[in-house]
Image (cartoon, rainbow, N blue to C red):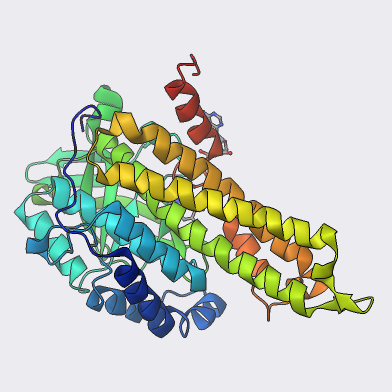
Amino acid sequence: MDATAARPRPQNQVPEAEYRAMCRDFTAREVAPRWAEADRKAEFPVAYYHAAAAAGLVGITAPEDLGGSALGATEEMICLEETCKVNPNLSVALIVQNIAGSLLHDYGAAQHREIAARNIAGECLLGIAVTEPEAGNDVQNVRTRAVREGDTWVLNGSKAFITLGGIADVLVLLAQTDPAQGRRGMRFFAVDRDSPGLVPKKMPMYANRPSPTYELSLTDVAVPESRRIDAGFSEIMAGFNRERLMVCGRWLGHMQHALAWGVEYAQTRHTFGRPIGANQSIAFQLAQCHLDVEAARRLSYHAAAQWDSGRPLREIIMDVSTAKLYVTQAVVRVTQTALHVGGGWALSEELPAMRRAIDSLVAPVTVGSTEIQLRIIARQMGLPCD
Ligand SMILES: Cc1cc2nc3c(=O)[nH]c(=O)nc-3n(C[C@H](O)[C@H](O)[C@H](O)COP(=O)(O)OP(=O)(O)OC[C@H]3O[C@@H](n4cnc5c(N)ncnc54)[C@H](O)[C@@H]3O)c2cc1C
């Protein structure tokens, strides 16, 4: 992946209002009725993925010959913003499909593109397996080893925090193929989840409960050479930039829901004979959240437009990291404010404030943490930051 090269621009575009309305309609039909039970059981409803695929929301940016919509990062952001206004967690599955699917269709051969096509059609749920117990932000420390034996690669190692890792049909998994080459000696493999030697274990988590995360242990997992994808460290780094845009959409929707809840609560909850929102101390906190939402919206859609412009990654990375940094800090502020405004009742499982506040804690730590975004921005500013 050459960060200085121009990137392809989206082939198609749809009017924003039309696309937003379609996503809203999908969300009301498919997210709203499903997520509470999925959250309670900490289980992903696979029917949600099927419904998203049927609505054209899997493979939004994928080529049309694979069944994709060939739209841009902007439409992807709209989709995630709208779905996450109702619930942030089921839509995580869409982010995973888009990132894993892109590796398959952007860099893969015919057999990988065929998996991507089945994914877009709703026939093959994907997972993306990069993180390891000792390799979180430090992706170059990935230690899962792939050793070639004839036409087969034998994989040994472990992965952590893999969303849908125990239920995805195929895992797009990063491994070391040539440790002497460091980060250049890594490749992705499309690994069938039911491969002998691949054992998933659900991780008990406070956050993202309806899209559970798994540890994966790999012991002598045999993967044919035909399942090796010609993409590795630098391709996933580029992919993380697009994923940062998607999570901006996710958290933008998330914070709007939290703020709307907080405002309604402040209007309807009375103390000392008047609504709590009549107190400036409460009203101003919510007004401050409005600023966070509006700033987050502008930074996010500006960054998505830069992505869709086709300009080289190097020229737009500042916009992407600035949006990711701001939105993921803002969502924590907004959800904490809603929690505070809600008083003791906000801690009830019957109300959404606590769930939103807990889930928002995922934002600053994944897809390149706050510190990683600050480092990227500092370097872009010309600072000699290590
Ligand atoms: C809910 C959830 C779902 C996930 N889903 C997936 C998935 O589907 N697939 C996948 O591959 N991964 C997934 N992840 C992993 C996620 O991307 C990692 O958690 C993330 O990369 C952080 O890794 P870590 O927890 O090991 O933190 P670490 O990298 O250990 O970082 C810990 C702390 O140290 C800081 N830090 C680290 N390095 C530096 C540095 N150089 N300078 C300053 N500070 C630093 C970080 O900012 C952070 O605050 C998921 C994680 C979560 C929580």
